[in-house]
Length: 126
Length: 361
Image 1: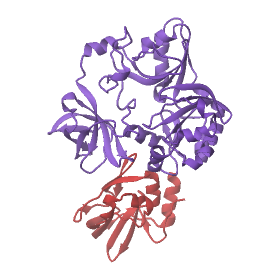
Image 2 (image 1 turned 120 degrees about the vertical axis):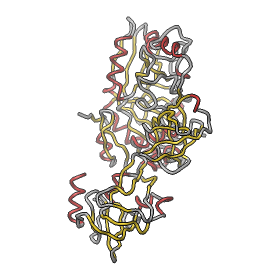
Image 3 (image 1 turned 30 degrees about the horizontal axis):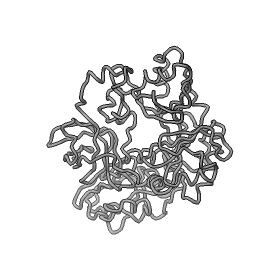
Image 4 (image 1 turned 60 degrees about the horizontal axis):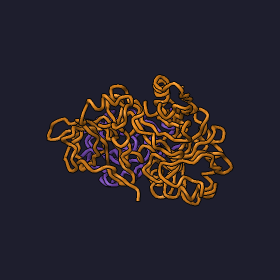
């Protein structure tokens, strides 16, 4: 069973979101990192880039394949986790600590799932 | 409907992530992950289920002549117990498959082909063997396990008489008793590392797997999936059918000259290969100098001009670099040539480097 913390919200495309004072922190879930396998490269956006709910903002490469990461919110990137550039394996080790981006000026959010609803999504995909 | 190898239940028990591959259900990786599996083979020892491979037996008084007729290499001056690479060509000089041939006796040979081409190869061979050669597809009767890595011999030495093991690269010994099981053992593999491949009857496959697994524990042996098999062969610059070669690519273009004996009197495809002359394109190794990972089927540019495409690409776990192989015009093949590769709209700088990317000590 993948780890799905109760205190976060989730997109069905396997991103997690936490919100504090209008800033949304976004990463990928334990289920996502496990499905992708060992990550070796993350192509992150830059501070100031606009992201759109439901659109890809980043791609991640595992040894085997490339996958898009989708933004659950529309807004502007205010911070990028630069640590991941040289150490993409942090996402495998600690998916809920290794956040990708922080987004501000959020005008729209996708319909987000709570932990129980997201667990069902994962179960159906296994 | 995808088929299960004799070791399918073993993979499930080992926690393998099962995927369809070439018509078979096989593990792409185990819980350890591709990088750890790759490193186990480079620094200790790893084991793979390769029972999906196709195996044919050639028997009869003209078996040798048949092999020399349908395969590009020369099998004439070959002692029993030797193994030799070769390519099956079309009349046009394209690659139907690549394979390895084991000599058991003058009138008995064992041929191992790619799983994805097994049906096609057998049809082609059946059509073209000479009178006096009988060929049989015995793939379904066999299990095959590859034991690869610097500690591979230490593992086997616990389970058999180590003096019986094939002492040289590309040789084989029949009827080696490993953990009580009758095996064909060859010093071969597809990882660029020292190692063996073991064949036994299908029903004995799981027993052989668990015996190796137990004996290997003290040497760091772990099971490895298709993912690591691909990164290992790519890091060692070994071509893969459907990537570096297919029926539209000649074995000379993809750099398999060592297995193509144009000085033989005749073989299927020889005339076309000679008529084509010096290849105009060739296989090169690329190393990314910018940031990103290259994959297959990406366009390669030099000074803005399209010069070819990648055939395989990955992050090489042992070298810790993004590498690829590409087919490019021969004028762009010099080591040090700077190119760019189109990765989903981004141009990633790369440079032509010598192959193999990795060579074991």
